[in-house]
Amino acid sequence: MSESLRLFVVEDNDDIAFVTRLCLERAGHQVTVCHTGTDALIVLGQVSYDLVVLDYFLEDMKGSELLQRLQQDGIRSPVLMVTAYGDQQLAAQVLREGALDYVVRDQSSAYLEELPKRVVEAVTRHRLLQTNSLLIAALESARDGILITDLQGTIQHVNSALERMFGFSRDELLGKNAADIFRSDRQPKRHVEDMWKTLHDRRSWQGELINQRKDGTLLDSSLTTSPIFDARGQMTHFVGIYRDITERKQMERQLVQAQKMHSVGTLAGGVAHEFNNLLAGIQGYATLALREPSVPPTLREFLDYIVQLSDRAANLTRQLLAFARKPSLARNPTSLTKLLETTRDFVQRSLNIEVALEIEEPPKDETWMALADANQLQQVLVNLTLNARDAMAKPQPAPVVFRLYHRVLEGELPAFPQNVAPGDYLVIEVQDRGAGMTPEVLSQAIDPFFTTKEVGKGTGLGLPVAFGIMTGHQGFLTIDSEAGQGTRIGLYLPRLLRHVPDPTAANVRVLEPEPSPQRRILVVDDEQAVQDVIRRFLEIAGHRVVCAASGQEALLLLQEGGIDLVVLDWMIPKEEGSTNFRLLREARPTLPILLCTGVVQTDQASELQREGAVGMLRKPFRMNELWYAVNNALHETA
Image: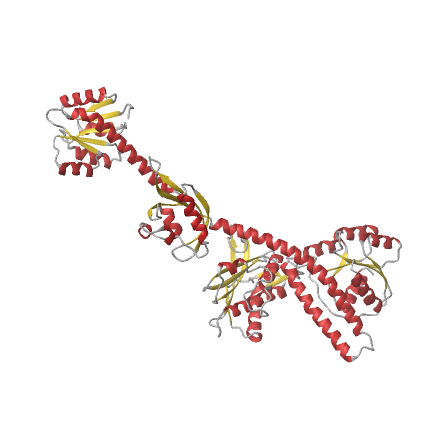
């Protein structure tokens, strides 16, 4: 060390102080001399030095007492003790009391030749200790988990963050092999082998691992590990830095799930539209055939089966539309307490499933209300109850729990498969004590057609449909499950603070056609079979029908005049339903238009009805449903 050091000599003997100062100044250092321990405390409390050269025996106090006083005052000055007594016991005591080193002063003053060297060594040692302390403090302060191993992977040091991350104490980790501690059955063996090969090739390795905590839970982590080299370039240790990326991976999974649900939902919506057109034709022609008086009994039975099966197919389509988040919801103010009680009675009586109710009491003169489609919500609850029953051992070990409570979220609630936005919610929970789900099963729980049940015992649409229905209610569905611990499904519904009537809610009535004046009706639909079925249905009711396959064709027919009503398909390829509606409305502002579709959302229906649409007919429909909708549309504008 060639630098000039700032030294503080504490020596009560003037002659010794003089020769000590002269010796150190000749070595190029700056020296300040103090004669008493009391003065030294004052000076060192205000000025810092690279080293204090302290005589063990001072006139007013011992050097050991001065060391103790410095430590009590929080003054961490490095000290080289000088003493006339060089026995081993005193040396050990001096070091124990906090001195960096000690020098024995002999009678011939030969120690002065060694003193400059010992001063430099003491300062170097002190700085190394400071650096080590700083590095240790940095390791302990780091948010990432850090461990150091030897070349065989034996753990030699860990920081506190690593202890917290994996749940092991330091004593449980030190001396153990890292590969034995930080393991996971989900981690490919070749992945770990590649890491060790890279390290032994003297290169750093970085990658993502799935590790197992002490309690058995899995941890997604990012690991960067590198070899450590000594001054000769020899590899001596490995250092690994773990970062907990569990939350990030969960967000990535949520994003992938959301994108997948959006893509599959869009596909499901398109398939449902085409399927509804086919069902409208199949059901319509079967219904028309049943009206023929000469149909043989056996054929009539077959036609009845066709109508029944098309009804079942239409129900499957409605499920697909609910999954696609395009459900036809009739949302009305609904008492969730009554809904749970009714559903509990139904599943206990009809499905022989024991259900326990846990309902939080609302404030006085209030009812837990939500703007909801009671039929759709009951479908969700029944499906979830069936899933819960199937997940539990036979006989049913414990009742399925229906739970209802109020919760206000000030911030976003992390959950799977989506976080719950801040808001005022009524929460319905369906909980079982069944087998629960492994992480692999949970990640696919709302994938359409994914099921863990035997072939023929599950469609895999229960949770996807529930997810779609909750989204249609501007709500959220959450899943909390762990293998062996059961499953809890949460349904978060915005709480209805006041009674808000739903303008789109319709009273569905099935009526036979009533006698009415003959009208000329324009049917706009791109599907030939649907055109033909609607035409035949309406001609049975006594109307005259013309058909168009596009919006432009409909405008041309409208210009000919004499049209009393338009039945307009909402989804025509390469055309916008709302655009066609407004073009027809501009051409004939007072003309009644009856919308006909299978995928329109409630908010869209409400908007178009405010603009003049007189009704909404959903495919596939029965003959009497068409008659009823047409009669209503004609009467409203009569």
